[in-house]
Image 1 (cartoon, helix red, strand yellow):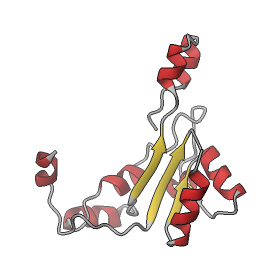
Image 2 (tube, helix red, strand yellow):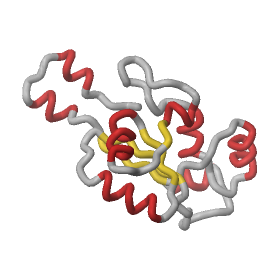
Image 3 (tube, one colour):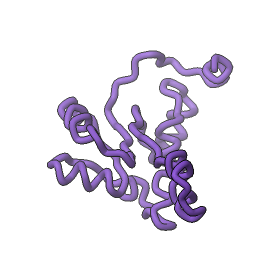
Length: 141
């Protein structure tokens, strides 16, 4: 991975203050406790569909990714986070002048941490589920 780190350099390394988190989980065990802690540290929570609902039901404030991006979830929830404002926020190199400019020019905020787990694709296949159910358990965004 060193080749990636040296290919695009920036002036900030190692310590990145956590100010915004992207949360999208299928298994929601423990997510309220983790996000309660993050919120207590003034971390802005971005979240998707059912995860956002769970956080709000627990009294936490979160921003729907669809509101953040200006694009609705679509294709039966298959497309939630596939958007330049999300990927740019995750991939932008802190301290890289061109990245910082591109982000500012495109209204892309930094996303400092991602909290996720994937749909149980392997378990769904292993239990012999129908092809259609297996397809619905592929999680790419």
